[in-house]
Image (cartoon, rainbow, N blue to C red; front, side, top):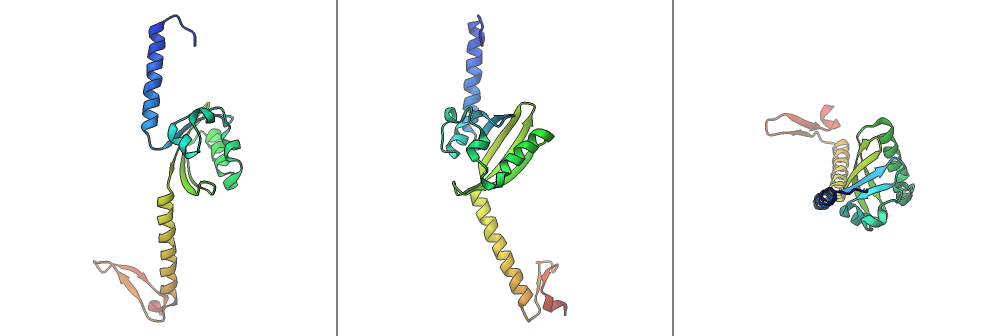
Length: 165
């Protein structure tokens, strides 16, 4: 940008410094991606997650960087976000990072803003709870004796098939 107004340049520089400081304090990865899938802006957390530096990612294509790993979920979400101009949120596992991430894509005319953060701990807990629920259901379904589970107010929470006979 060319200008003969040094004060305007200082204000722009100061605004950029404030923006950088704000986005670097945020614990989520933040990226601005153009309609072609190229990184326009990447905060330090996003670069750290992607094992890179913001300056190395700027200009790179997100689809080339991630490839068709994970069945291309991110590509389909990106395209839907752009074509429908609608917020998109999805979880995805990255085997190479051994991590789960939640992605939130916010559309604009020029591309998308992507926020993503590590949800691996939450996913591990969900997996453990789902396994326990399946185990408990199997135990209840195969029990020969009747089983009735109530809450403190004696509201029925669950029964097994033997109870219904």
